[in-house]
Image (cartoon, rainbow, N blue to C red; front, side):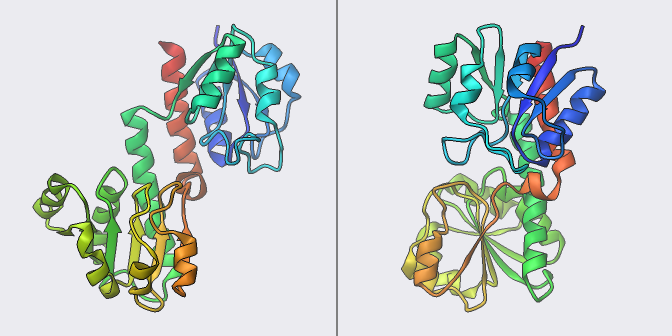
Amino acid sequence: MKEHICMVGGDKRMYHASLELRKRGYITHCCGVDGEKDVPLDEAFAQSDSIVLPLPYTRDREKIFSTGGSEIDICDVFSLIEPRHLVLSGGTDERLRSLAGTRGATLCDYSESERFLQKNAVLTAEGAVEVLMRESDVSVSGTDVAILGYGRIAKPLADRLRAFGARVTVFARRTSARFEALSRGIRSLDFPSLGETIGGFDAVFNTVPAKVTDRAILAETKRGALLIELASRPYGLDPTDAEEAGRKVIIASGLPGKVAPRSAGIAVADEIAEVLEK
């Protein structure tokens, strides 16, 4: 018999993950899932074998992340957790591990598999191109674009931008990353050259989850250049630095759930199902 799963919080990704899990025979109960009818938390937990938290599980460390208007305290969730529950979360931290341990429950991060990370990176890259096309008043073809970092997200982003005819330059710290970009026909530079060259770009994407620019560097960007932040905090393109430099950063994190929620939700369902079927 298939398991009962309680889905708690999230955006449209979790709605589509719930639908996909039902197609596979699981029974889902939803609390605070955007687009789903709410079931009382205590009833859903009593009926469920597994508890699924969203990606990310929280934005403020107090409430479960939800775009559906529900406000569910993390502590309220874990007050209902029992040792029999398997808790699956989109990301974990010391606090979550401590809460799960206190309740005697097993905690699993469904977002850490390489398969999931690669799928998410492709969806993020596609969403990033959509942001550029929406925010720009010129064609992507012929646009000079800088990408800070050359990891999972930057690689498919560079490929898609080049397919549209953009002139792409990658900035990477590791020599091996720069050589990889060069081997694929992409101009690549080290970060120390960023201040001297950033003024030549019409758009700058950051994919590095660390501060890689400052106010002086951002002040060198073209007036009207699009500064698009794809990483999580701490941002590589700091919004405060940008404002002090008379520029504006577009925060575009969480793109899979915004631009391709069904595909992103199926990717989440794939990981949850794999954990449950092991």
